[in-house]
Length: 135
Image 1: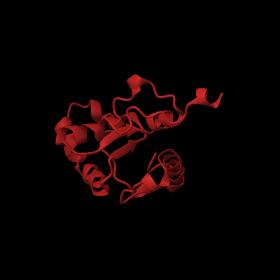
Image 2: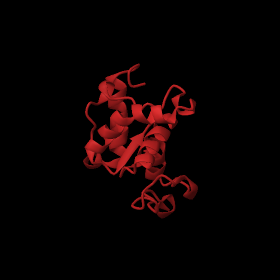
Image 3: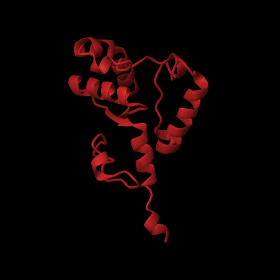
Image 4: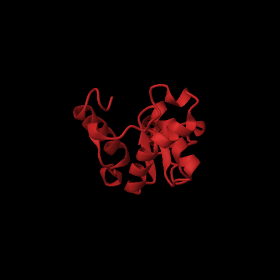
């Protein structure tokens, strides 16, 4: 998606992320948008059996994430999530990896207890929206 649809789609994704986490919590990577680096987990690479090569390729993305100092790295798809989470876990990096859909569900107050596995302790018990309190 990053290269296929370019900056207009990147801007739409940024709008969604900022709306969910708050613009003050959004930390940009450099380079970004259509010039951002691939994580190295897509195109079947996760299932290829070449874990060390995949992780080596992912070093550039890991360094890019580390340079932000962010506590969370939001990923849009399963392949990115699995690769970025693996990079953090194997190298003991400090960030939490979270799906964008997880944060969307959290912001709506519909994230189930079993769907909180990738949230840090600061978010595991958070419920943002309580429809029953609106009654």
